[in-house]
Amino acid sequence: MWARSMPRRVLLVLLVLLAAGIRITYAVTTGHASTMTPIEGQIAHDIVADGRWFVGNKLAHYEGVPGHGHELIDPASLDLTSADRHGQWYPAITHPIGTGVVIAGLWALTGSERYIQIEVLQALLDAVVVLLVYWIAMQLFDRAFPAMLAAGMYAIYPPIAWDTADPYDDIWAVDFTIAIVAAYLMMMRSGHRWRWLLGCGVLSGLGAYFRPQVILIVPVLAVVTVPATGWREALRRALTTALVVSILLAPWTVRNYEDFHAFIPIRSGLWETMVGGLAELPVGGFASIEGPAHRAHPHLQVESPAWDAVLKPYFIRAVEQHPLDYLEVLAHRVLLATVLMHETIWMRRGAGAVLDASGGVFAFAVEHPFELLEYALQPLVFVLAMLGLALTWRRWKRQNTMLVAIALCVLAPYIAMHVEGRYLLPACFVYFIWIGLGAELAVQRVKRRSSVPLRRPRIGALVGDRSG
Image (cartoon, rainbow, N blue to C red):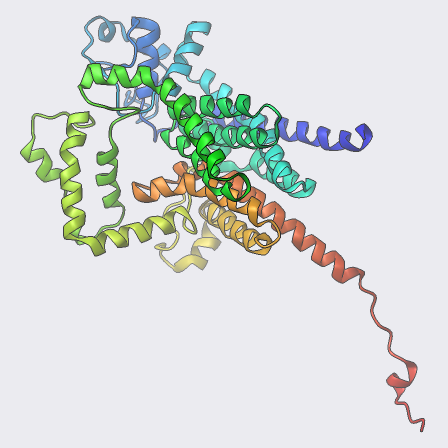
């Protein structure tokens, strides 16, 4: 038994090392992402240097330094003495606080406020997640080849590897999603179900401080497994997890009520995101929503709970007046979240618009092959995953239903609000499993066809049998 499993274990260790090497290389060579806001660094610096928790400082500038464009700059490279001494503080609420707290802990331990620390930590943690991807696939399907292929794809998948170089919440959303799914499967097979169910709640509650959508995973999985467990067990799992999540989020909710006098369990900005999502597609009915709101409420600060509350009726009114335009936006988001899914910054800092390129797609492919690869990789992964799902649906209907539910937990909230490629990365491990299953099925069919012996015709059939 040990001799048989040894090569597989060695291969898994090699995949983890490969994943860590790719991710750390991204962290060391690409610099800090210019697409992210520096709020996590601000929160961390204010905790470590000023002892102020979960606040921002209007006088502290962490980006836009001359000679660096909009790239994030390590606070250790900046002189923030004056900003710290005469700070204009405001409570942070528009972004999840999880990454900022992790960064603050690393800076407090090392005494150096540099982003490379969180980038390396994210790289190492996400490399270990390769093992969870393999384990989840094995628990669901008990097929070594698809599980190993899924783990290998996760290890080398460039969009996820690049995302670990961002000192931001996105890669934590990926890792927490996979960890919650693994804990739930362990709960289903363990003799200590309550222990693992509480673990699901703890992971969901902590994960909500990075990406709130992870709260949906356990309740949705409980619902889709009702045929096997019954409604009582499903309610027990969902409510237990919800109770643990509520306990973990209670301190933050109380803090928000004290600062903003409003019930904000995680973060504000929902309606601001919904309004921003209407601009994804330039349709006439949603040309300008924030402009009238600014003119009607010039005293309100953007990205504040009060501003978010003001935008809610504007959004609802716009959708009521232009329902067909809104359906068009939703359809566009569905395409962006599926066959048009792409995050084109992991190879050459942005591939540009392939479909709108001068000379057509073929000319673009000839002149810019790397950019085309960058643009086409994620849609290709989705299409291959759907093919694998279609080929294996009947054989593993229960397991595939769970994977579909996990993918929808990731995609559906953003289809309702606003779609960006980085938001969709937590669903990729599901796609890799489907691709692994489809690949194994294709290999088996090829082997069957090649193993069927060719029937040798009789000699008489070749020369013409004239007997009789």
